[in-house]
Length: 458
Image: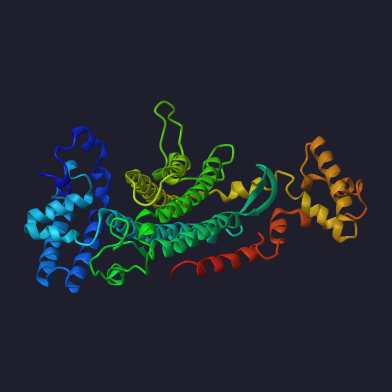
């Protein structure tokens, strides 16, 4: 079949050029969105009397039939037709005859593909927000069960102060909340309609861009036709948001990998999210969080690829921009898989409370509370810091922890220390005492949980 644009040419396209320049292998993902945009466009053409009303109706019925075939996987797309737009138009002409060629009146593949991607990304962003909320709900479930479970808090990966396990997990809740807000905010830019910008300069037909925008659920139309067909900022913004999100997933995954090791043994992941070794029968490998961590580079690459693609392009549309889709598709599918796995993996993981609670007694992470204890009794904090540093050094040399020392040993460093020091140094008291807003105190964590639930759908 001859090209729909072939009138100006005297030779057939080289077969290798066809294969190299065709995008149908990947942009067929846009098929249903392309039909959605075409229906709105042809409906407008009919209402504006640009084509006859009965022709518009016939084209819409033809598009309905093609949509049904695509949904039933009965369509074989052709590389010779280059992209999803030309494939569908050819299918339409085959279905209803020459009148199908009127579908393209008043538009170009340039505004058509931009419209398709806006529609695709709008739907996928909303789906990702729902998946993200499911992850947040799993975090809340674990937090509710572990408010008074204690875990060492770290800085520089060195034990710092004990914290509530729930408090630690809720830190990720708020990271994901910001990710969700970024995605929600990005919808304001995604929800602009480029349809009607045509190739780059608009069209001579009396189209109604507001009508097609309203029909497709867009909030605005691009005010500038050049910008409409060349803008890919909305995809860049999505990829940027996705990169921050996958970074947060990677940080959480890193902790899950560490915590599930023998050295930590703070959690055990459900067997459904682990694999074994081909040679070592005792192994239980945390493959899912490891792979989630590994996928980070993939999404970063998609962002950098599109930034590099766009950096030197003159207005308006250029063939280079065909390369804008695969990274977007890849990032969407990578995040869909990651979030779909992360939610049940978090929900089903077993927190080894006995192990985590005992771990906070076998360190010096209560030293800050001892310095605060002396400061409250009137010793300047900087002086108290030095005194407690000497006590810790002494305890290390004696192979003791602070709670193993006697009152007499403590008094050798300061007469301000009394019998109540042992209560102050108990891990549960150290955690509970942090009552400042946003702190790890158990009551504060309960308040934080209440606040977190307000950010989730009821």
